[in-house]
Image (cartoon, rainbow, N blue to C red; front, side, top):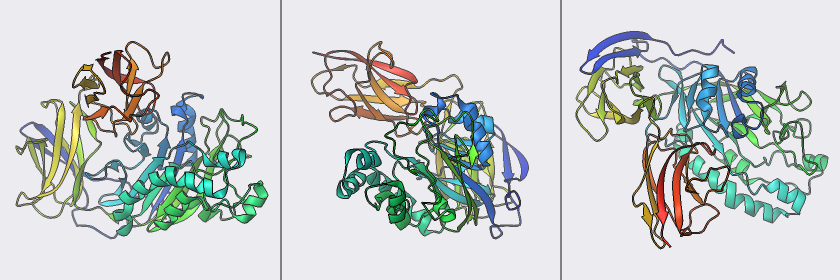
Length: 499
């Protein structure tokens, strides 16, 4: 596998600016060459509440290593993705729930829908990752509650199909441009290629089913990597749901299926696919004890990378104040340079030539800066802007800060909430609790996601998700910032509802 893989490397150039030293690493100064094929193993792995209900993260790390995964789309990491990445020595994207041997670049405008994998200087593939809603789970309704085909299709269309359409819309420009693109996830829906007449007879299912999500994926140009390698769903069912919860315990009414996928599109050749699970009876690689209720899938590919567009991308949505602020770039020509500015300002805090080659890395010293949002901007020789990306600098000991616009609500007044210095996990959420009540002792009253924004604002009011209606009963409450779909909360703001 290593024969085709080319790791990112380059020479170092040291420069000194007004705010301190800067390092720049550049690619080959002779210019770009045609991308060479790269071997890549892509894995999808739902780790079940961050492996908190099983044996911990050691088995998750072990499973990734045993699969030989270069890139992993995680589901349910529960804000533990940085810990997993550190154990593996990988790059991490909390907003994308991604781990990778290769740098993960989230350019401006990608909005958490996709990211680049920087496979070599100036050469990229794209990846998306999802966790579609689990409930209501249609196979249960079909097998255990007697849904007919029309009811099942209607339920899929108004739940998971609506969700996947948004993902696919965001990927259209990449697919149109021929960028090799992967899409990992727990889709919580089977494939139409698994509910064929032969498979239905073998499994005792009531009818064949053209599952809307898998049809939409194929219509968009994606290929099901597991079924490319194992086209017969009877001989190789490849079930990922379920390994048991906890493995190997399985309820007698369970419906087994394949709902975890590694999809591929563009100049990509699938060379293999592997199931990782609780036993060799149900998986190609067995991990004991097994840390999840889902089996994982790792597929191997030979891909032809795409050329990176002219751009500059900060390494992450946030960076640690006091450490170098790094950004990767692909420049356009001689005289291109990268500047650092405070967001909203036009005054450069630092300015660095892009170097002799088109591809490289800049690293700005942040020891004299303050917390807040900054822009890295790629300019050409005439100081015309070519690309811009924003990053938030956060001190090591800084906790998220929540504020409410009005601490006293009357009538059906909405709660207006602002936050700063959030960790930016994909599923960080705002939750309203009774004041002083822990998440274990009492349920939340209302909630909404932060959309992975590090700084932002939102409102909670009529129609908000949660068990309580709006307005809330009179009393004292607090809104908390909770981490990545978990009940671990960091930061809160009190408010009161008048009777």
